[in-house]
Amino acid sequence: MAGFNGFGGGNMQNLLKQAQKMQEQMQRDKEELEATIFYANAGGGMVEVEMNGKRELTSLQIKPEVIDPEDKEMLEDLIMAAINDANRQIDEKAAEMAPQIPGGMF
Image (cartoon, rainbow, N blue to C red):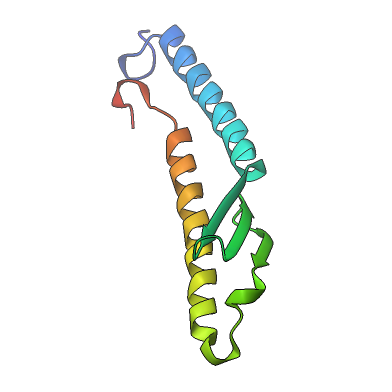
């Protein structure tokens, strides 16, 4: 018998081994990404954030001079900008780590 859908048994086993290796690599990459700390700031460093690859905010620093009770919207905007920048960095790193599928299998 020729095997499954025209593939020899050895080819199918090789394909399964490749898929398993890819899955293991993806898990290692995920763990590495989650452990990476991303740094971002806004307003020339007036607001600084640290975020891990799980998108958990691990640190938030706000310079006292940016705290103006009359302009809380500016501070909110700076915080959002810094967090959004950290999220962008995580997205870029995740895209770099995305597996390259050989032969366009998927």
